[in-house]
Image (cartoon, rainbow, N blue to C red; front, side):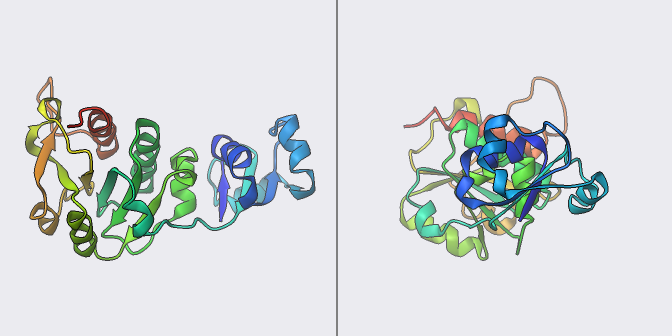
Length: 228
């Protein structure tokens, strides 16, 4: 896959050298000296028009990296963790990337994307500023089968919902799953039926709702510390 943009590319070059194939440079001085020397044999210089073409018009900032395709984690790997975030039908790669970044920074252990058949992993890696390269992540083809397997292992399920209990008043199970609904529809009915608790964020001012990635950051932060 090809990622672009200075921050995500530098993260990949610094932390995931074993996955790097080619480094494309379209701006002089964009690479720090140590990375320039490290990847000297893998660097190709590009004209701006070719960099624009490779990034499909995106803001490449003069740096693109071709690396191995993103390798999803297996459920057997993910269920070894305590705190899992499930995305129920989310499709916007900007929101997904922001959630991955927050989840990694704030202490969630893994992410499962359900209700989608595929995702643009390169775009999610970019919008997560590279956090996706470090976070166990998988797409679940059947969310109910996944939930049943996690339930058998003793996980408690918490769904983000406007009519839920205030997250600030709650204490959470050690083995816990936070479920976040899609941008337009919220949690699906089949997921709601599986929840142990609904959780919400108390608003100081009357307003519709928070963006799902903003709400995710608040909920993940609280659920990372308030544990039984």
